[in-house]
Image (cartoon, rainbow, N blue to C red; front, side, top):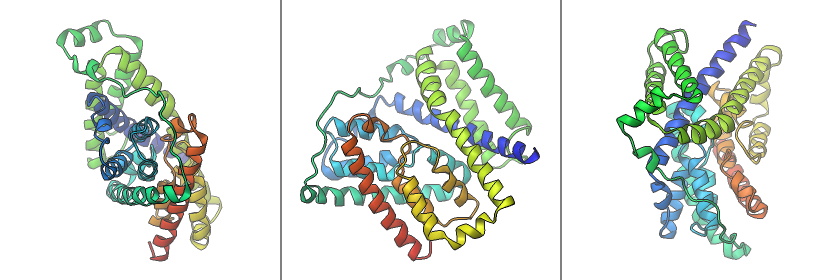
Length: 342
C-alpha cells in the first residue's frame, strides 16, 4: 500500500502541474483572439514554419488550430503533416514536468523535422496524386474579448455571487497551493518544481477570480477537466504502476534493453492510436532511463494526442494518409537516431 500511495501522490503532482500549464496556455490562446491562428496564413514556407511551431506548443490547441485551417483550405497537405509531426499532445506537459531541458530539446527537434517533412510531403503530393480535403464549415477560434472586459465590478460580482463551480475551483487551487507552500505536497525542498508550481497555482487563483462564468464552464470544466485531466491522471497512474510492477516482479529493464528494436517498433505502432494516454508509457520509461531518446522521438513524432480527432470526424481518408506519412517518416527518423547510438 505504501508503493500505491507514493505512485498516487506522484501522479497527482504531475496532473496538477499539467493542469496549471494547460489552463495557462488555453487562457493565453483565448486572450490572443486567435492571433496565432491568423499568423499561419501566407506563403508556403510560412505555412510550414508556423504549422510546425503551433504543433510544437504543448497541448492540443496548436494542433486544433492546424486542423481548422487545413479543412478551411488555408494549409497545404504537407503543412498539416508537418504540424502533426511536431505535435506531442498532452504528453508534452508531462515531459516538461519530468525532464524540462530534454523536453524543450525534443520540441525544437520536432519543429525542425516537422518543417522539413512538410516541404518533402508537398513535393510528393503531385507524384502520389493526393488531393487535400475540400473546405468545410468548422467553427472559428473562440473570441477573447470576454476575457479582456476586466473590471472591479466583475471581480466583485464573481466573489460576492460566487457559483459552486468557481468556489470548488478556487478552494482546490488554494488547498494545493497551501500544500505546496507548507511542504505537505510535492518536493520537500525548495527547488524549481516547487517554486514554479507555487507561482502557477497563484496565477490560476487570480484567473479563477477574474474570468467570466462562461470561460469557467466551457474552457476549464468542460474542456480541460472533463476531456483531459481525469484521463491524464489515470494514464499517468497506470504507467507508473506498470513500471513499478515490471521492476519488482519482472526484469523489465533487462527485457527492454535486450529487445530495444522491438520496443522502438512498438512505440511507432502505439503512436498511430489517436488520443493521449498510451504514449505516456514511453515518456515514463525515458524519464527512468530505460529507453533511449530515439524511442521517445519515435513515439512523439508519430503520435499527436487529441490533435487529429477533429479531422478524423471529418475525413477518415486524410487522417489515414497523414498518419501513414507520420508513421513512415517517424519510424525512419527513430531507426536512424537509434543506429547513431541515441
